[in-house]
Image (tube, rainbow, N blue to C red; front, side, top):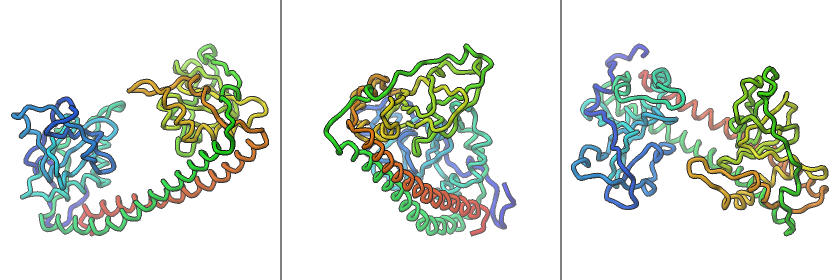
Length: 395
């Protein structure tokens, strides 16, 4: 921690808390008296209490786990480890789940919003990053939470800082909300353009009639040969571009690296298809091979690949595949399910014209979204800078 301003003290979370403890381990029920707040219920620094399930809990346990205003709950495990939520304007009765840790602030020592805002600061997140355990399943336990260092000014100064932050962030948050709305609007316009393709004609053709059969390969049969492996994480599902393929030798290829692909092929992720991990191979990769998590679509001669690609991105295709989705933990469809879907039956010339029109729209949309995202990132960086200064006594 940097040198503190005059009158400030160096403290730790444990010194300003009445209690720090883990949540309740219980089962959710359809109806009950007490809500059951979980990590997954906290999204974008907010909780939709209507969506939070009820829990089965005996009366003698309620007092120990019942949430109160000014409590701060802290995610101790998973991708959100380190994220926190300040309980305010609580109009329901709720306990909290075991993957959360509750901090009950000592109001004689710390203003809860001051502590919560510190939990958003760059200094705090640097500490979390350095001390979190586990790569696959990050974990940050209660003992570590209790020992997080915090800069501590007087209570009046804490309240002044929070008031200043609130005023500054109100303007920034409004600008950020507007930018996010603009990004969503651009995405909506693009989706409408894709869906309009299906209104051009009532004639339909199955995707299976537009594509050729592809072959599986086994890179391990060539253990020293270099391959380019494309898996689902290689695809940016916002821009639908392959951004991060992996380069490996055949001997190191994972068991899922089996689908032979080539330039111009369309990849459609059949696991969690609603996420639309879809892309066209538009580069000449060295010995490319794709994951079995993709359906590979190689169009026949006389079919425009971009036309088929645009159809696959549409909400209309999502509607067609939804009845086929199976599996709760890993919802998926089969290649056959996808290729049985129907798209507009158009002549090659018409396909070309539509593909070109949508390409122009997409290029404009991507450019606009990138501009909006850059502005959004700049505002996020500004907030971080303000938080950094706030906890050094510089605002």
